[in-house]
Length: 78
Image (cartoon, rainbow, N blue to C red; front, side):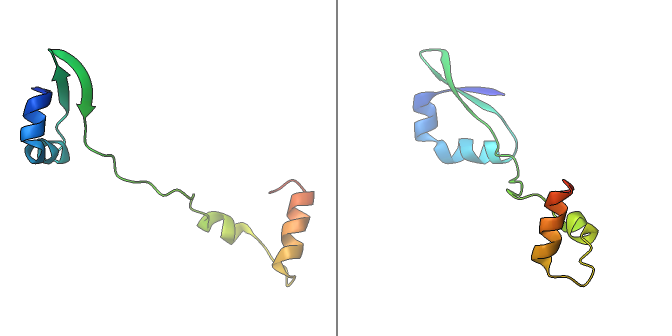
């Protein structure tokens, strides 16, 4: 973890962004007080859950999907 003054970050932003990209954490200071932290971004996760297991568990029994969903809601399986 590095501590760097605001002015230094302004002058060499690309360098500190590269450091963060490589996994380093940088604390930005102003008048020797920490004011911000530059950290690597965590890999983006999917906003939506994987529904493949659920899809395979739905048994349509030769009925329209809408009927199956209504039945499952009535049974509180959903």
